[in-house]
Image 1: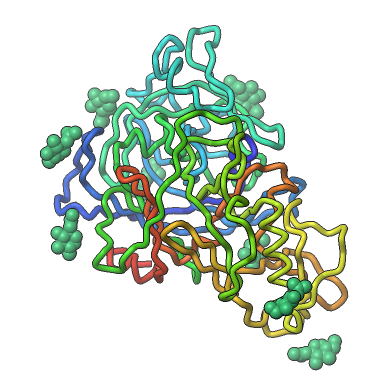
Image 2 (image 1 turned 120 degrees about the vertical axis):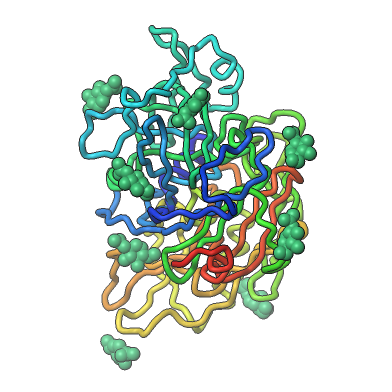
Length: 438
Ligand SMILES: *[C@@H]1O[C@H](CO)[C@@H](O)[C@H](O)[C@H]1NC(C)=O
Ligand SMILES: *[C@@H]1O[C@H](CO)[C@@H](O)[C@H](O)[C@H]1NC(C)=O
Ligand SMILES: *[C@@H]1O[C@H](CO)[C@@H](O)[C@H](O)[C@H]1NC(C)=O
Ligand SMILES: *[C@@H]1O[C@H](CO)[C@@H](O)[C@H](O)[C@H]1NC(C)=O
Ligand SMILES: *[C@@H]1O[C@H](CO)[C@@H](O)[C@H](O)[C@H]1NC(C)=O
Ligand SMILES: *[C@@H]1O[C@H](CO)[C@@H](O)[C@H](O)[C@H]1NC(C)=O
Ligand SMILES: *[C@@H]1O[C@H](CO)[C@@H](O)[C@H](O)[C@H]1NC(C)=O
Ligand SMILES: *[C@@H]1O[C@H](CO)[C@@H](O)[C@H](O)[C@H]1NC(C)=O
């Protein structure tokens, strides 16, 4: 999923405060057993705006979601983009680029490059869009490529990762020499990316946790990331939707993504009149629905997108003015935009949109349905685009639920029971219950 990786890379970072907490009663450092991680690690998150010039590329954004941790011996602090949509974690290791934070492998006593003959290289990289290869030193070489033709490349390596005082020795990651993302501002603030999908080399798979959760605040730039069993029931019951798995590989189906079954879409209480088959993967695997912390907005395949677009226009007629400009398509996928007077006090109240999954539902309230396009002015109006985009316009064969629509929702990824739990919640309140203070 090259495009998917690009979306992931460009879309979302969480910045974690320097201060981190653990729910463990023991104040001392402990080591979480890889195969039996029962401890809970709680990290306060802070989303951060990245000032960026109007971008030449689609998919760029100005909000980032990052995690801070330490790598190596002695530990070096790094900041990584949290991404449920990709597998291999990587760090920028090219220390000659002084404008970017980097991990310096030569200063870590425990840094170990992965040999290309190792099973990590030969077997575990098979889910990558380009399997790893051997370089001239017989080390495992990986190229991660993105839809804008940029790429990141370097060697697979292992080192000790430390999160909230817990050590994860021998964690495999990509130590990248060149490439990185296409967003220089993002690169200047982050050291790399934390891959969290279901692949065997993803960070969560290597840590051995059976569950992780996050909650992204809607009102400020804070959030919470939790590794381990959140035992959330004391806060709010979660509704679960099963993760979809397929036994045979299909060309368009990403088997290591967090795939759920979308069953319908509602505007207010009006269920769009669509056959269920629209939401089901076809014989090529096209049409899966992925939950992705690394993508900002949500993308729907053409037929579902068109039906939602029509219904939303219909229900907002008289409240919103459609921007009648067929030439204007925000980020290449958002072709439903509106004009809002610059002197208006705000966007009017809008009907909520609900994504109905098997067993669970996510309701996106009106204030998260439009995104003001920075710098775009028409006469005395600003331009606001609908935050659901058309996958077809980007050539993506999937539905992608982005983080903008996961705000103020407790998102639990239950790997053991192969399900995703959701609950509408105020994330700042949830964070306080876990002992975090924003
Ligand atoms: C790394 O982070 C820790 C905790 O946030 C901080 O105490 C320490 O000073 C940092 N080290 C460096 C070298 O920045
Ligand atoms: C995990 O820990 C529990 C209790 O400490 C133990 O019963 C179980 O056998 C352990 N599982 C593994 C895979 O080590
Ligand atoms: C980032 O996007 C938000 C909208 O989500 C906007 O209000 C803000 O001005 C943007 N910041 C920059 C620096 O572009
Ligand atoms: C780093 O990991 C190695 C095993 O990969 C372990 O032997 C060593 O003790 C770890 N170092 C620290 C400082 O935790
Ligand atoms: C590190 O980055 C510099 C500057 O972009 C580049 O010239 C150099 O080739 C890179 N090093 C490696 C090993 O790729
Ligand atoms: C979850 O929390 C409740 C209430 O605090 C407690 O009674 C229960 O034992 C906890 N369960 C686990 C598995 O920690
Ligand atoms: C708009 O909604 C009304 C009432 O639900 C319906 O009768 C009408 O056909 C809709 N119009 C369009 C263009 O979808
Ligand atoms: C906004 O400006 C228009 C004229 O450009 C004026 O008619 C309208 O009353 C103003 N609205 C508000 C809320 O100030």
